[in-house]
Amino acid sequence: MILGATNKSGSKPPVLGSGDHVYECIHDWGELPADIKYGNTHGVCEDSQGHIYVHHTVNKDSESHNSMVIFDAKGRYVTSWGPDFMGGAHGLYIHKEGREEFLYLCDTKRAVVVKTTLKGEVIWTVGYPDQAEPYKPGPDGKKIKYSPTNLAIAPNGDIYVGDGYGSSYINQYNSKGEYIRTFGGKGKEAGQLDCPHGIIVDTRVPDPILMVADRANNRIQRFTLEGKHIDFISGTNLPCHFGFYKNGDTVVPDLGARVTLMNSKNEVIENLGDDSQSDWRKTRVMTRDHFTAGKFVCPHGACFDHKGNIFVVEWVEVGRVTKLRKV
Image 1 (cartoon, rainbow, N blue to C red):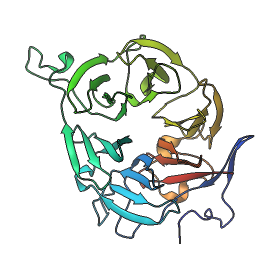
Image 2: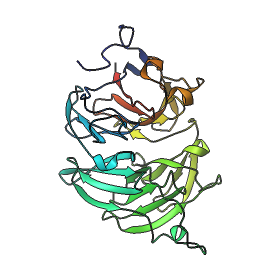
Image 3: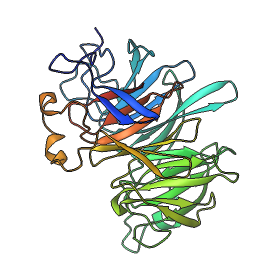
């Protein structure tokens, strides 16, 4: 039985949204094997075969230490891998290169970015950005903290890594993982960041640009691909990351208990499952029976699938994957 077919009262799943954006809310989606217990569910993406990848930190009581869990489109378990990411599984990005797809993963515990095949075979690993001027040792010999949270890839293959849990810089590399430049840095002024938690390259515009979830500054900030500030986008509270759909819509998981939908003009369409007035910081460490059906607790990652459904993973200690099925 696939979890989430009904809510805890046995009734049909709640329906969220309005107009052209109506979704059936299926919490605890996916047939999780008995030997895997979710830790914080941090990243989610879909491959070209319709498989859904969930990156989680792994619960300490889990028999399996695999951090990546893969399901088919119907929520049936396919496989899992990635014990090295236990405790640090965070950002997750899928990218097609030629005929093959690759995963790019951020590990906040080991402070590395890893490129793998869909089966988890490591292609390369990039660690501390020693070549970047801000990361070079100070007079006391100490280095600033580095803990990458998410990354994005430009059309030319360049990779942009947000040091969200470290020192709030963005580090740019080429497709081989070779260093190019660093920009950002902690602050509130234009061009500065405070926890660049999520990042994406916006190719909906003629000249691609970077959108950054500047979470602790409670805003989205946009940059050129060379790292120059463009502007700010309002409408989110604690933006975590982004996902685009082919019609231009954007999904923004907002840590403060809601999922925001924006149109191609970056205008807010809906705030789905909004429970932002609740004490979600306390709820996130509670057991599953404290979660309210149709409401989010701490959305951390989200993506559209090829049919326009939305998958949301949350920063809750017991982990949670929700499918918003397009109605």
